[in-house]
Length: 114
Length: 114
Image (cartoon, rainbow over the protein chains, first blue to last red):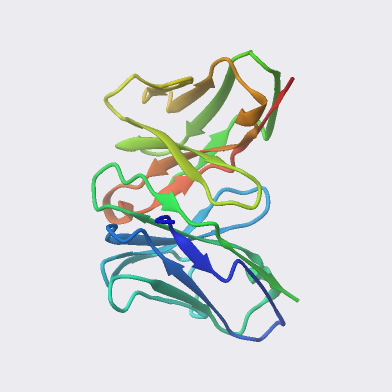
């Protein structure tokens, strides 16, 4: 399968714990994006990378959130001191660097904070 | 930023009819407007994009129009089938400092009944 993959698919954690998600993009793509989606809403942009450089961050990305893409391939999204409001689907997408920027999404990681 | 409104949360039509979904935005006209399909528990899947200088785009049974004067896009599925049942998301590309991100509407849930 050459699509975007995410791990884990589901994560249940207790409030205050740290969690880390992984995304493996389509190998030829140099851009990688993280979005958050809650029930009944569209995806909300969190951050994106071009190769290993983090080029843009949303104000949604509080100090408890950090993302990395150390070698310009896979990426990790860490949430520290999780809160119940962090419960959501976390989506990763990748794309080529081109003007029209159509994005290819992974299946998402469903986070539940108890 | 952009505020995006998609006509109704749910649209129910009979098989064989044409489904028409609406996407309205309030701020600047994007260089590109995209439509995605999302099935429950899965990531969005790219369907079509249209440039700001294009009036209409077609792909098989899908048609998208883009009116920058009205700040509106219409998405049509002709000869609809039950397999077309899903949530359809409108997405706009950012401009300037937000060029890398997509702004999504909350989606319209389409149900096609036999």
